[in-house]
Image 1 (spheres, rainbow, N blue to C red):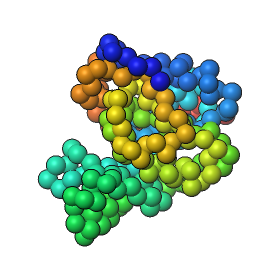
Image 2: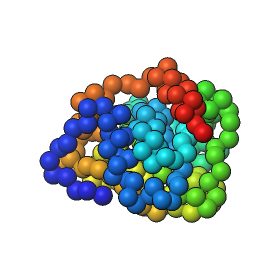
Image 3: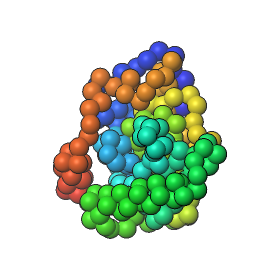
Image 4: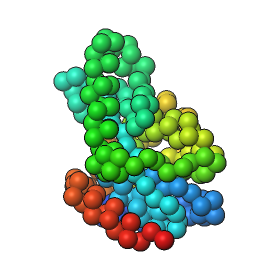
Length: 219
């Protein structure tokens, strides 16, 4: 991980993915990793990482568990196959029935996205593989925690979280990853978007086009 006091701006997610791929290649290319992108924006970054590494590429889905009335803040996340992470703050702040309701709502949304983004197909085999979990940035990392757990349940040899940009503090649960690879850490850190000139929404239509392109390039 590079500790950057000076803010570095990527033009867009494509450039961020290309730079992240170059950064990761010396350490991971020889392991023939599986690159898993976190939709939506993380998918584009992951695609260009996978291209640089000549690696297998797929999508893996998780959704933040939002605080009621403050949806921009999360108290954990739920991943596909029912893997759930609830932070200590969430457990102390919210009643159990509220937590269960939000988990069910987000679990339903994860299932919908798996159907939409992968047509319901299962995740690639991870057993004994190095898995790179790629997002377009890490604020707290809470959304990535159940994804790390899911990959470990599937017996990945190593689970590496990778992103172009992050803050300097993370949710404690992210320590479960075997490694964390980040290109830049702007200080002060306000949001992931501060490292991008163009951090516009990556739409479902753009994601579908990206996956068609990835499928056309697959050997």
